[in-house]
Length: 127
Image (cartoon, rainbow, N blue to C red):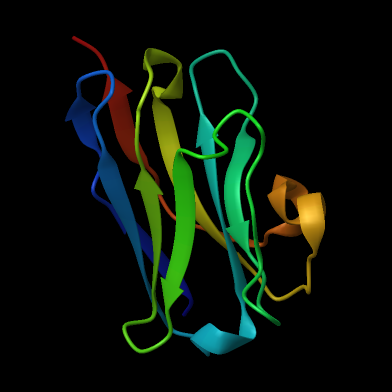
């Protein structure tokens, strides 16, 4: 069965960095696109980065542009989210998700287009 397992979350000071990992199994990795989403208490889930399954193109929203980078390792079957210059407002549970759809541009940040989700990892940015 398809599995997504996030890791790498934790407590970090403002301005710090974290790298989240999403280890996958149970499916053909290269057939899927991936997204990272986050959800803070009382807020809707939002996409923070995505990578297309066809050409590897990526997309991030303006709120994290220049700070977050998504990448994928087709050999390790793992997706990464490098987060730099973290801010308190980045505090949330971060989820990895997979889609068999070919999503381009900002559409790949829409959580409704993803059918498979990990359990999430907590990221807390605080002094």
